[in-house]
Image (cartoon, rainbow, N blue to C red):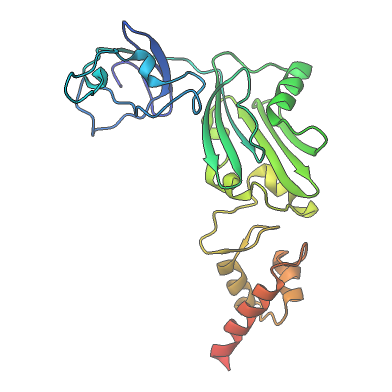
Length: 266
Protein backbone atom coordinates (compact mmCIF):
# COMPACT_ATOMS: atom_id res chain seq x y z
CA UNK A 1 0.00 0.00 0.00
CA UNK A 2 2.82 2.40 0.84
CA UNK A 3 4.55 1.65 -2.45
CA UNK A 4 1.35 2.42 -4.36
CA UNK A 5 0.66 5.58 -2.36
CA UNK A 6 -2.55 4.23 -0.82
CA UNK A 7 -3.42 5.53 2.64
CA UNK A 8 -5.90 4.07 5.15
CA UNK A 9 -9.46 5.05 4.27
CA UNK A 10 -8.57 6.07 0.73
CA UNK A 11 -10.45 4.80 -2.30
CA UNK A 12 -8.60 2.25 -4.41
CA UNK A 13 -9.46 0.70 -7.74
CA UNK A 14 -9.10 -3.07 -7.94
CA UNK A 15 -9.13 -4.25 -11.54
CA UNK A 16 -8.47 -7.47 -13.39
CA UNK A 17 -9.01 -8.84 -16.84
CA UNK A 18 -12.62 -9.50 -15.84
CA UNK A 19 -13.62 -6.08 -14.53
CA UNK A 20 -13.00 -3.55 -11.75
CA UNK A 21 -14.45 -2.29 -8.49
CA UNK A 22 -13.81 0.68 -6.19
CA UNK A 23 -13.13 -0.21 -2.56
CA UNK A 24 -11.96 1.67 0.51
CA UNK A 25 -8.46 0.60 1.49
CA UNK A 26 -7.50 -0.70 4.90
CA UNK A 27 -3.78 -1.49 4.96
CA UNK A 28 -3.01 -4.32 7.37
CA UNK A 29 0.04 -6.35 8.36
CA UNK A 30 -2.27 -9.37 8.55
CA UNK A 31 -2.12 -9.54 4.76
CA UNK A 32 0.82 -11.23 3.07
CA UNK A 33 2.87 -8.91 0.89
CA UNK A 34 1.58 -8.84 -2.66
CA UNK A 35 -1.93 -10.02 -1.77
CA UNK A 36 -5.20 -8.12 -1.44
CA UNK A 37 -8.43 -9.21 0.23
CA UNK A 38 -12.05 -8.10 -0.10
CA UNK A 39 -15.16 -9.68 1.45
CA UNK A 40 -17.30 -11.42 -1.14
CA UNK A 41 -20.49 -10.06 0.47
CA UNK A 42 -20.29 -6.56 -1.05
CA UNK A 43 -23.23 -6.51 -3.46
CA UNK A 44 -25.19 -3.88 -5.36
CA UNK A 45 -27.53 -3.55 -2.36
CA UNK A 46 -24.70 -2.29 -0.17
CA UNK A 47 -22.26 -0.52 -2.48
CA UNK A 48 -22.70 1.84 -5.42
CA UNK A 49 -19.76 0.35 -7.30
CA UNK A 50 -21.36 -3.06 -7.28
CA UNK A 51 -20.17 -6.49 -6.16
CA UNK A 52 -16.51 -7.36 -5.75
CA UNK A 53 -17.28 -10.33 -7.97
CA UNK A 54 -17.08 -7.99 -10.97
CA UNK A 55 -13.29 -8.26 -10.76
CA UNK A 56 -13.17 -12.01 -10.10
CA UNK A 57 -12.92 -14.79 -12.65
CA UNK A 58 -16.01 -16.93 -13.15
CA UNK A 59 -14.21 -20.27 -13.03
CA UNK A 60 -15.04 -22.52 -10.07
CA UNK A 61 -13.43 -25.58 -8.56
CA UNK A 62 -15.16 -28.67 -10.05
CA UNK A 63 -15.52 -30.36 -6.65
CA UNK A 64 -16.12 -27.62 -4.08
CA UNK A 65 -17.64 -24.95 -6.30
CA UNK A 66 -15.20 -22.42 -4.81
CA UNK A 67 -14.85 -19.46 -7.20
CA UNK A 68 -11.50 -18.11 -8.31
CA UNK A 69 -11.68 -15.39 -5.66
CA UNK A 70 -8.38 -16.46 -4.16
CA UNK A 71 -6.42 -16.81 -7.36
CA UNK A 72 -7.48 -13.84 -9.48
CA UNK A 73 -4.60 -11.55 -10.43
CA UNK A 74 -5.52 -7.88 -9.93
CA UNK A 75 -3.98 -4.45 -10.24
CA UNK A 76 -4.54 -1.96 -7.39
CA UNK A 77 -4.26 1.81 -7.83
CA UNK A 78 -5.02 4.85 -5.68
CA UNK A 79 -8.08 6.94 -6.59
CA UNK A 80 -8.20 10.65 -5.74
CA UNK A 81 -11.29 11.62 -3.76
CA UNK A 82 -12.84 15.09 -4.11
CA UNK A 83 -15.00 15.01 -0.97
CA UNK A 84 -16.24 12.82 1.87
CA UNK A 85 -19.68 12.57 3.42
CA UNK A 86 -22.03 10.87 5.84
CA UNK A 87 -25.79 10.55 5.40
CA UNK A 88 -28.23 9.22 8.00
CA UNK A 89 -31.88 8.53 7.15
CA UNK A 90 -34.72 7.07 9.16
CA UNK A 91 -36.71 6.19 6.07
CA UNK A 92 -35.85 3.10 4.05
CA UNK A 93 -35.27 5.29 1.03
CA UNK A 94 -33.28 4.07 -1.98
CA UNK A 95 -29.58 4.91 -2.12
CA UNK A 96 -28.75 8.46 -3.20
CA UNK A 97 -28.04 9.18 -6.86
CA UNK A 98 -24.75 10.71 -7.90
CA UNK A 99 -22.11 10.06 -5.24
CA UNK A 100 -20.38 6.81 -4.48
CA UNK A 101 -21.95 5.20 -1.42
CA UNK A 102 -21.75 2.30 0.97
CA UNK A 103 -24.95 1.46 2.88
CA UNK A 104 -24.94 0.34 6.52
CA UNK A 105 -28.30 -0.76 8.04
CA UNK A 106 -29.05 0.77 11.45
CA UNK A 107 -31.53 -0.04 14.18
CA UNK A 108 -33.59 3.06 13.29
CA UNK A 109 -32.77 3.63 9.64
CA UNK A 110 -29.66 3.48 7.52
CA UNK A 111 -26.30 5.18 7.14
CA UNK A 112 -24.49 5.94 3.88
CA UNK A 113 -20.78 6.63 3.70
CA UNK A 114 -20.51 8.98 0.73
CA UNK A 115 -17.64 9.90 -1.57
CA UNK A 116 -17.19 11.97 -4.68
CA UNK A 117 -14.37 11.88 -7.21
CA UNK A 118 -14.89 15.52 -8.26
CA UNK A 119 -15.04 18.60 -6.05
CA UNK A 120 -18.32 19.52 -4.38
CA UNK A 121 -20.48 22.05 -6.23
CA UNK A 122 -20.99 25.49 -4.75
CA UNK A 123 -23.78 28.00 -4.27
CA UNK A 124 -27.25 27.03 -5.45
CA UNK A 125 -25.91 23.83 -7.01
CA UNK A 126 -24.62 22.69 -3.63
CA UNK A 127 -27.95 23.55 -1.96
CA UNK A 128 -29.85 21.44 -4.49
CA UNK A 129 -27.36 18.60 -4.23
CA UNK A 130 -27.63 18.56 -0.41
CA UNK A 131 -31.44 18.75 -0.45
CA UNK A 132 -31.62 15.72 -2.75
CA UNK A 133 -29.34 13.74 -0.46
CA UNK A 134 -31.12 14.77 2.75
CA UNK A 135 -34.46 13.65 1.27
CA UNK A 136 -36.62 15.32 3.92
CA UNK A 137 -39.37 17.13 2.05
CA UNK A 138 -41.66 18.98 4.46
CA UNK A 139 -39.33 18.62 7.45
CA UNK A 140 -37.69 21.46 9.32
CA UNK A 141 -34.06 21.74 8.19
CA UNK A 142 -31.29 23.35 10.22
CA UNK A 143 -27.93 24.05 8.62
CA UNK A 144 -24.37 25.00 9.47
CA UNK A 145 -21.86 25.92 6.76
CA UNK A 146 -18.18 26.84 6.78
CA UNK A 147 -17.34 27.94 3.21
CA UNK A 148 -13.68 28.53 4.04
CA UNK A 149 -13.27 24.87 5.01
CA UNK A 150 -15.81 23.57 2.50
CA UNK A 151 -17.92 22.00 5.25
CA UNK A 152 -21.72 21.64 5.13
CA UNK A 153 -23.86 20.13 7.89
CA UNK A 154 -27.63 19.72 7.77
CA UNK A 155 -30.23 18.03 9.96
CA UNK A 156 -33.92 17.48 9.25
CA UNK A 157 -36.35 17.40 12.17
CA UNK A 158 -39.94 16.24 12.02
CA UNK A 159 -41.94 17.18 15.13
CA UNK A 160 -38.66 17.56 17.01
CA UNK A 161 -37.34 14.12 16.07
CA UNK A 162 -34.12 13.71 14.07
CA UNK A 163 -35.30 12.44 10.69
CA UNK A 164 -32.07 12.64 8.70
CA UNK A 165 -28.73 14.40 8.73
CA UNK A 166 -26.01 15.08 6.18
CA UNK A 167 -22.34 15.97 6.55
CA UNK A 168 -20.12 16.97 3.62
CA UNK A 169 -16.45 17.90 3.82
CA UNK A 170 -13.29 17.85 1.68
CA UNK A 171 -11.61 15.38 4.06
CA UNK A 172 -12.86 12.58 6.29
CA UNK A 173 -11.24 14.22 9.32
CA UNK A 174 -13.92 16.93 9.27
CA UNK A 175 -16.76 14.40 9.61
CA UNK A 176 -18.39 13.64 13.00
CA UNK A 177 -18.57 10.32 14.81
CA UNK A 178 -20.60 7.72 12.91
CA UNK A 179 -21.62 5.84 16.06
CA UNK A 180 -22.84 9.00 17.75
CA UNK A 181 -25.26 10.02 15.01
CA UNK A 182 -26.38 6.45 14.41
CA UNK A 183 -27.58 6.46 18.03
CA UNK A 184 -29.20 9.92 17.75
CA UNK A 185 -31.19 9.07 14.61
CA UNK A 186 -34.88 8.89 15.45
CA UNK A 187 -34.38 10.53 18.85
CA UNK A 188 -35.98 13.84 19.95
CA UNK A 189 -33.77 16.92 19.82
CA UNK A 190 -34.63 19.82 22.11
CA UNK A 191 -34.60 23.33 20.55
CA UNK A 192 -31.77 24.38 22.85
CA UNK A 193 -29.66 21.41 21.71
CA UNK A 194 -29.83 21.99 17.96
CA UNK A 195 -26.56 23.92 17.73
CA UNK A 196 -24.81 21.21 19.72
CA UNK A 197 -26.29 18.61 17.38
CA UNK A 198 -24.76 20.13 14.24
CA UNK A 199 -21.49 20.82 16.03
CA UNK A 200 -21.28 17.11 16.93
CA UNK A 201 -21.44 17.89 20.66
CA UNK A 202 -24.81 16.27 21.37
CA UNK A 203 -23.12 13.04 22.29
CA UNK A 204 -24.65 9.60 22.39
CA UNK A 205 -21.26 8.02 23.02
CA UNK A 206 -21.31 8.54 26.74
CA UNK A 207 -19.01 6.74 29.11
CA UNK A 208 -22.06 5.37 30.84
CA UNK A 209 -25.68 4.67 29.95
CA UNK A 210 -27.45 7.56 28.23
CA UNK A 211 -30.42 8.65 30.37
CA UNK A 212 -31.65 11.83 28.65
CA UNK A 213 -32.07 11.31 24.91
CA UNK A 214 -33.09 14.93 24.30
CA UNK A 215 -29.83 16.44 25.56
CA UNK A 216 -27.55 13.42 25.34
CA UNK A 217 -26.80 13.32 29.08
CA UNK A 218 -25.39 10.08 30.48
CA UNK A 219 -25.79 8.52 33.90
CA UNK A 220 -22.21 9.24 34.98
CA UNK A 221 -22.65 12.97 34.36
CA UNK A 222 -25.91 13.02 36.33
CA UNK A 223 -24.38 11.21 39.29
CA UNK A 224 -21.35 13.49 39.28
CA UNK A 225 -23.50 16.64 39.21
CA UNK A 226 -25.82 15.33 41.94
CA UNK A 227 -22.91 14.67 44.29
CA UNK A 228 -20.81 17.73 43.45
CA UNK A 229 -23.65 20.25 43.61
CA UNK A 230 -25.75 18.43 46.24
CA UNK A 231 -28.75 18.30 43.93
CA UNK A 232 -32.00 17.18 45.52
CA UNK A 233 -34.57 17.12 42.70
CA UNK A 234 -35.02 16.39 39.02
CA UNK A 235 -35.67 20.10 38.49
CA UNK A 236 -32.24 20.95 39.93
CA UNK A 237 -30.63 18.39 37.61
CA UNK A 238 -32.44 20.03 34.70
CA UNK A 239 -31.12 23.44 35.71
CA UNK A 240 -27.53 22.14 35.70
CA UNK A 241 -27.51 19.68 32.79
CA UNK A 242 -30.76 20.16 30.88
CA UNK A 243 -31.74 16.53 31.50
CA UNK A 244 -35.47 16.15 32.04
CA UNK A 245 -36.18 19.64 30.77
CA UNK A 246 -37.72 18.72 27.42
CA UNK A 247 -39.99 15.68 27.02
CA UNK A 248 -39.74 14.66 30.69
CA UNK A 249 -39.68 10.92 29.99
CA UNK A 250 -36.40 10.51 31.91
CA UNK A 251 -37.60 12.20 35.12
CA UNK A 252 -38.43 8.87 36.88
CA UNK A 253 -34.91 7.69 36.03
CA UNK A 254 -33.44 10.94 37.37
CA UNK A 255 -35.33 10.52 40.64
CA UNK A 256 -34.11 6.94 40.92
CA UNK A 257 -30.50 8.11 40.47
CA UNK A 258 -31.02 10.78 43.14
CA UNK A 259 -32.31 8.21 45.61
CA UNK A 260 -29.35 5.97 44.87
CA UNK A 261 -26.90 8.85 45.36
CA UNK A 262 -28.44 9.93 48.67
CA UNK A 263 -28.78 6.48 50.24
CA UNK A 264 -25.04 5.88 50.95
CA UNK A 265 -24.80 9.25 52.72
CA UNK A 266 -27.82 8.43 54.88
